[in-house]
Image 1 (cartoon, rainbow, N blue to C red):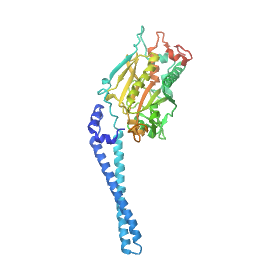
Image 2 (image 1 turned 60 degrees about the vertical axis):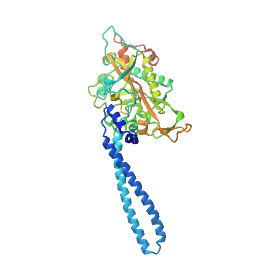
Image 3 (image 1 turned 120 degrees about the vertical axis):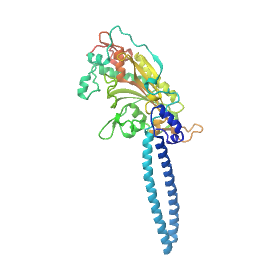
Image 4 (image 1 turned 90 degrees about the vertical axis):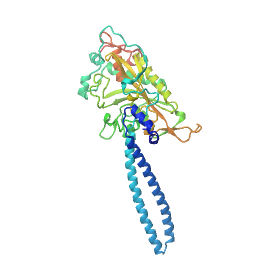
Length: 433
C-alpha cells in the first residue's frame, strides 16, 4: 500500500507511475476524499476542544450553583449546548469513517510504484533480457511434450485427476510422485544450506493475512475461499511475510531469509485457454518459496542475491534458462522491481517462467504493519517500515515439466538429473511403472 501523505504531496509522481503501469487511478477522487478526511478531523478536534473547555466550566459552575436557581439554569443551558456538540461530533465521526473507508478502498487498489531501474513498457513484450545460462538441448529425434511423456511413462495421470477433482488438477504416481517429493526436498535443503530458515506453515489464511501481502481485496476472484472465511493460499509468500505482521523487528536481525514448501491454490480466473495443457497452469501446485525482510538500504542488493539463489537451483539441475527484468507494464501488483527466471521448454520452443523474484519495498510492510528499529543508529528514532522480498525457489511442477522435456530420451525414458538421484533412492532413469 502506498503512503497517503506521499500520494497527496506527489500526485505528479504517482500519475506517471500509474501511467507507466497502464493503471488508471482517480486522482480527483483521492484528493477530494483526502481533503474531506483532513477537514473532518480538524472539525472534530475543534469541537472536542470546545467540549473539554465547556465541560470544565460546567464543573466549576456546578460547584458554585449550590442554592442558586439562576446558576443552575445556566448550567443546564450549557449541558444542552454540549449535547448538541456531542451530536455534531457523532455525525462528523460517521462522516469520517465513511470517508476513510472510501479512501482506504481507493489506496488499497493502487499498485506499487516501479523502481527507477525498471524498464518502461506496456506489457511482457517490453521485458528486457538480462542474461542466459545453459544451451537448449538438440535432439536427434522428435521431442515430445511433458503432457505426453508423463502419461506414457505412467507417472502423470491427467484423466483420473479430472475424475477426482476437475480439469487442471494433476495426479502423480510412482516415480512421478517421488520426483515431485525429491524436487521439494532438494530445493529446501539447497536454500537452507545457503542461509534460509525453513518454515512449515498453514495453507489456509485469514483475510488479514491475504490483505497484508496484497492478494485482497483486489484479487479476491483469484482465491479459493472456504465457507468459514479462510482462503487457500496462492503461495507461501503470504504466510512467510505475515509471520511478522504487526511486529517491530530489531535492525540487528536483518536481513531475515525464510523459505518454505507449500501446496498453492489459484483459481486462475480469466486464464481459460492459456497454457491449460500439462503442468504449466493448474489450480493446485507445489512451490518452494523464498522471502526476505531487509532494510531499505540493502533490499535491492538482497534482490540480486535472491535471484542468484533461484538460479543456483536451475544450474544444479542443468536446466537452461534466462533472466529477464519485467517492464513497468508487466510488474505484479505489489512489486517495485521483478526479475523472472524462464526455463527452456522444448514443447513450446521457448523459455517459460519458472521463478519470479520481487522487491516489494515497503508496500506490503505498510499493509501488514511490519517495522524495524535501530537504537544504535545515529539519527534513527522510533521505528520505520522495512522492505519485503519474495521469490519462487522454484515452482515444482514447472521444474518437473522442464526436467521431463529437457532430459527425455529417444526410447521415451527420462534421465534423472544427477543432483536429484540421492533423493530418488539412486534412480538414474525413469522408465515407467
